[in-house]
Length: 147
Image 1: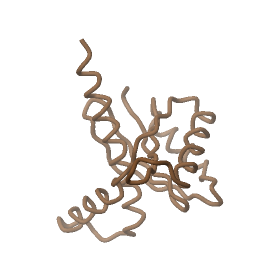
Image 2: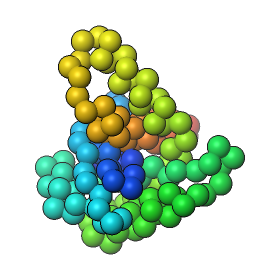
Image 3: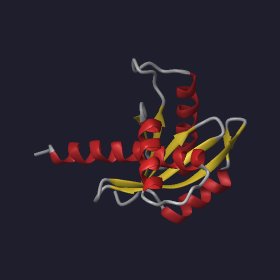
């Protein structure tokens, strides 16, 4: 797989990241508006057209105990729509603590001289990068354990 897009689905914004399997790394890419549980499909179409991902990874929000919650339904619905619309494999990835890690990464980047931006927007995209990196690391580790 050369390229994958990762998503952190919220009620108002979807954070988007791009990553690849070779480096098992991802970077924050953009945020896409979500209105009435409907994403800005034109923006998603443009991102898909630009990156031509071979897979999508959607963060699945779970409780600390690993149980589904109301936000889990939104993420699952989004994943189903992605698969139907683009006919590309879609994987769900546990996203527990991804927003916290994204906020920490963002704080470190700002301390290192990153210009102040709309924090919430950047953090959503960074959370998508965290989710995608976790999936990439799992995927690469699994591939490396095969005989």
